[in-house]
Length: 186
Image (cartoon, helix red, strand yellow):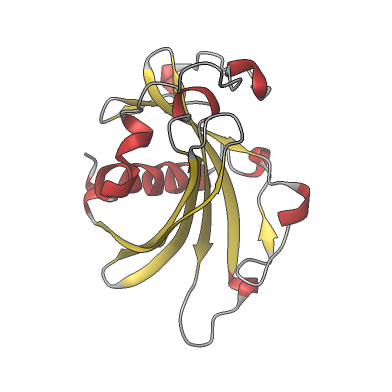
C-alpha cells in the first residue's frame, strides 16, 4: 500500500438495496461514504452494482472530489466516473466519460471526461482514492472476490454491455501500475 493511500481514511455511510433483476431476482446494491486525509474530506463516493453480476456487469463508482464543508459549493468539486470490472488478471478499474444526464449536480458543478483525467495529475489522485476504497470499505468485498454469476435461465452476460478493450501501457509512463493485486485499466 502506498503512503498516499495509507494516509486516507474511508468512512462508510449509507447502504441500501433497490430493485430486482427480472431474470434472477438479485438486488442492486448501493453504498456511499467519504474519503478524508488529516480530518479533511477529500471526496465522497457512491458505488452501485447488481449482486451476483460483478463478473459480467461490473460496478459503477462515482467520486465527487474537491473542497467540502463550510463555504464550499458544487463549484469547488468535480465528479469522476469509474467502471470497476473483473478482467483476465482479476479486479480492474477504468475511468469513463460521465453519463450525459450527470454532467452537473448539486454536489459537483462539472463532471470530468475520461480525457480530462487520464494522463493528468488528477489520474494519480483518482486511482489512489479507488485503492483506498478497495482496501478500507469492507462492503465492497464482492467487487474484488465476486460470487459466481447466477445460473440459467439468467440472460446476463459479458455481451450485455459493450466494453472498450484495454491496451497494455508503457510501464515507463507510470500509468500502468498494479496496486495490491489490482490492475488499472485505461
